[in-house]
Amino acid sequence: MNRELLKARQTKFAFYVTVYTLIIATAVVVVNVLAERYNKSYDGTANKRYSLSDQTRKIVSELNQDATIRYFDQSTSLDRAKDLLDQYANLSSRVKVEYVDADKNIEQARAFEVTDYGTTIIEIGEKREEAKSLTEEGITGAFVRTLKGKTRTVCFVTGSGEHQIEDTDRNGFSAFKELLSKDQYESKSINLVQTAQIPTECTVIVVGGPTSDYQQPAVEALKKYVEEGGRALFMLDAPLKMSRQIADNDLLSKQLESWGITLNKDLILELNPIGQLMGLGPQIALVSEYDSHPIVTAMRGVTTGFPFSRSLETKSSGETNASKLFSSSDSSVATTNLSSNEIDPNDPANKKGPLAIAAAGSFATGKENVEGRFVVVGSSFWAANSFISFNGNGDLALNTLNWLSSDEDLISIRPKEQEDRRITMTQSQFSWVRLVSQFLLPLTMVLLGAAVWWRRR
Image (cartoon, rainbow, N blue to C red; front, side, top):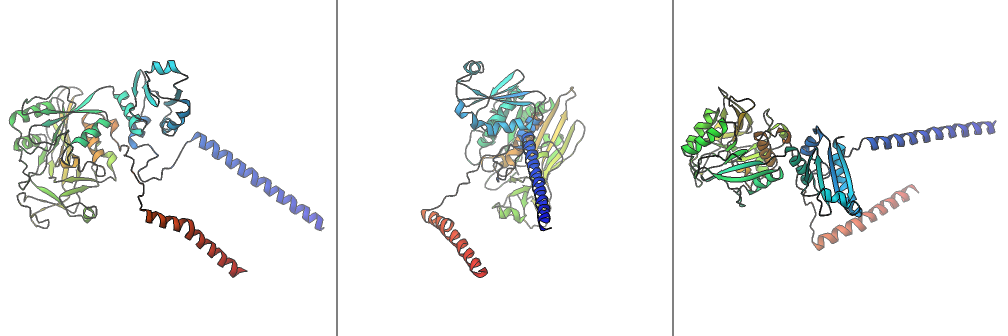
């Protein structure tokens, strides 16, 4: 009886072991098949260092023709590109990646004019572009150049105290120029004081914070340019009359008003305590909510800041269609006292927020598929070297230029610079860390274990 019961138990146990083994084996096989078919990963780093940006995902996933990425290197170095390039292939079935041994495939390397190891060539249709670097920025930039196939030039107006693209100081636009180059734009300066005429090669005109009044010839040149289908970005600061003098620019403001955007002569002050926690003064308006427009669609949940900004109002009529892009916070106010350093944020005469800071508009030229486009922002310092790296300011600047140049497919959040997150310690601090991690913590665990054993003994 006992022997039969034992056999029954052994049979039952063997059955359970067999079933559990089959279940585990099946689960392992299914997981491996799914992992092979659906290559997914999770990037837990703070700046998403190991995942592709929204811009790259948008460009690659919306490809309407096949693309090939060819990486040329020595056989022993081909693997260094796989982690990055395979991510592109996983985004779209239209993307194919080839790893070419440049030493064994000399003829193919010559055909693609490869002269250096580590060269990446993007081929879409009959067009080819070499990536400037083996980074997401370099690879995606090559995709953009291949897809666009045209030179896009941003012309910055000079002659009336505007920010300069060659200036590297805190008020210069050199960082803005560098950002544009990463999105495959060329930048140049034009002087409307010397010649009140806009060159034909200008894709977009930028009026970046003039401190002096624009004269009638310059305003007429801008008017003609936009109303004949040109694209322009106007950044006009609050007309301060303190240590920093900024002209009213009435002629240019009147022209913008005729297009449906009225600039107010005031200064927005941010009373939100969050700005103070971020180390910002009340003269910097913070924006975290945006209206419905292609420029700001991808900006949801991203904060931007606008120093010395003024408010504006929009109105669509006739040949123009203007709409607000974003406003200051509910806790902001606007003061019309622009001639004193002692500005009272709590003055009952101040206008209460939210207050519109930027607007976009279009002008109906009457020609088929041709429209003028313009964006007006009540601040220029948000795009200056000292502030363009603040949160989403850089993305907003590039998205604005993308919309103006009719490159809406590029509007997105771009890859961020890799942060240097290394910890710098003194020799004393390093010794303490080593003592705690290698000796004190293990010794503590041993003593706790010994105490539990002694108590249970």
